[in-house]
Length: 380
Image 1 (tube, rainbow, N blue to C red):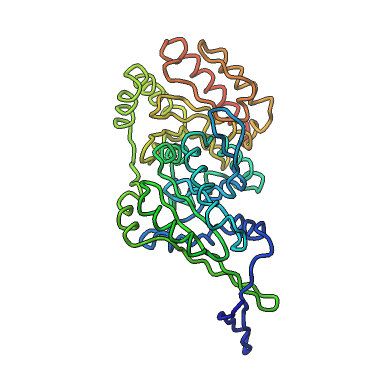
Image 2: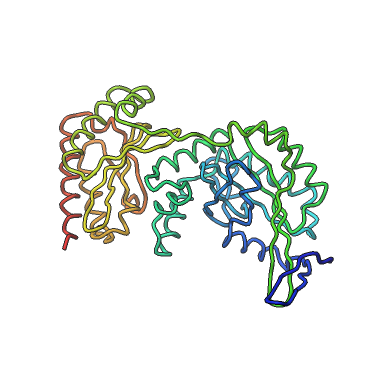
């Protein structure tokens, strides 16, 4: 293939020769390790996209509760929590001209209905913690906000998915003209979904490799149509708006339970922090202990109490399975709560209405007091 890229190495000029990828897996691996190759600054020059790689080979079912029927090469989220499905093909693969379009539309049609973001979130968090990192820090870096509402971000991702606000990206070393025309057409016709193609050419010269990504198939007309809705403005929740939203969505009984939990928590936790979710409002109840922050429960405008067993699994003494099981058993002693043992590896939600009876709410406070005492045993 022809050259055209030159690399200065000291006083020497090295000609980089364009070469195809030996295997699609090589290009997939590059995107997995370096998602910035998807050229977020070209996808949206006014608000460059930043990427969070959720998983490679994300399974998709074709019916509720059914087995995975397809596997999309990469699933990412951008800073606005927009799910981004990526399918990778080499230009030598004949499927890239027609079959890949039908394949991607199958993915899109079923993802908005059957994609299980909660399960993918669990897998993502496990993978991040295995690297010695904290998922909350990664999301904060993605959205460029140290006080980012972590749960609110994931709720927003689910809301985007339900609304069909997704992005479909075809990736190849060279995008054929036929595919580019189809992408242009789909991108102008489909709303609110975006359809794009990213060409990532590879140039080799000696031991050097140069990659040049370029977004194809994004017309000015399509960008103008979709730019107003491309980014959702965050919303700073506070107690009044939070409780009003619960009352509107679920009911006044649940709103009063939330009010009681907030009032009690201000006396027992270090902080009661309201989130900035554009769609879902959350409140994190935080306890600072010996440089660590414990957030055992979140309240949400969906009318639930979320117990963060998965997050606690990396924080002593709840990094011990026995301690999380003890917490689970204490919660199950509350009338109306029946969490399975498997919940100690997840983030189960309990309806706020469960704690409407005074004795149930009092028992919840007893359980939280026990948790706080156990967390404080880690203090030096």
